[in-house]
Length: 93
Image 1 (cartoon, rainbow, N blue to C red):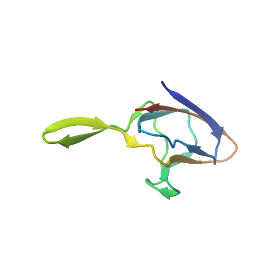
Image 2 (tube, rainbow, N blue to C red):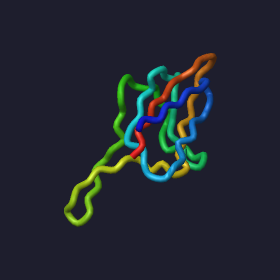
Image 3 (tube, helix red, strand yellow):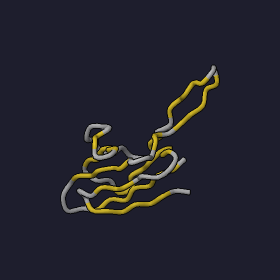
Image 4 (cartoon, rainbow, N blue to C red):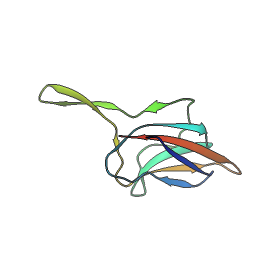
């Protein structure tokens, strides 16, 4: 299932849920965005790239390699810009 979020530039999208986020895509991007957890930035402000962005990364447990997304607990995306709207697609895990 793909989650769809729409908002004004400068708004924050709450992605908090059990599990993980495997990827995202801005269909109509804000000027800049960043990931935050509990209000603390996890990344610098960035300009969105075109297309799907995978958040999957490898994990090794006892020589078994699996992939995992970013933990969605208390996760949000902050946006910034003026006088515009954005559309965000999110792939939960």
